[in-house]
Length: 216
Image 1: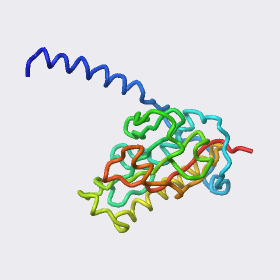
Image 2: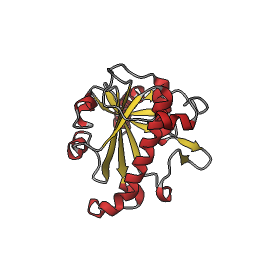
Image 3: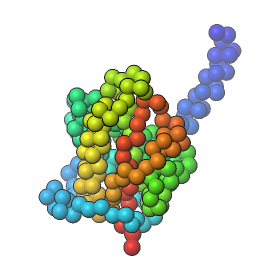
Image 4: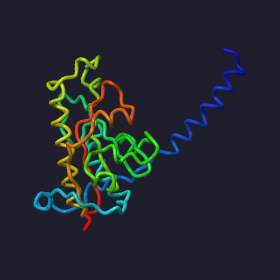
């Protein structure tokens, strides 16, 4: 390749890469020792469908992401929730009022994915578009060894449904410990979410979970 064109391409790409990295959100280290006792968290665990529009703190968000899909055994890369055969096929999409991010547990950050307020695609109930945070649990079936969308069926998704349930329960307990409200949701226009967020053919939306301070 002509050197002039190579430098020209680099001059175009490097600012784009830097701009993308600037949109990532570096999370504070999750608080792994605080919170209320486990048995009390289970006692306090509940669902709410009334949310304040007030944003949650970044520390709280970090704690929630780690609870849902964080790494608790760094030497083995194992997670805070079980994963069948350790495929770890789940992706945690964090939908905030300003943008959509994907949780990067290894680097403890939210990686920018899409601009704008896309909360209304996260569920069909009114409160979903008003609460400050929505977690979307998405399975990438390539990580389970599948190669074609035609191979995806109810059987191949069973483990992903279980994994999403584990993730959601951890978030429930974390919310109870942090004074936050939450609810797990299956009422999602999955095809619309898949289209609007330009997910790959090998990804499937499993469940959503709305999070925030309880409203009145």
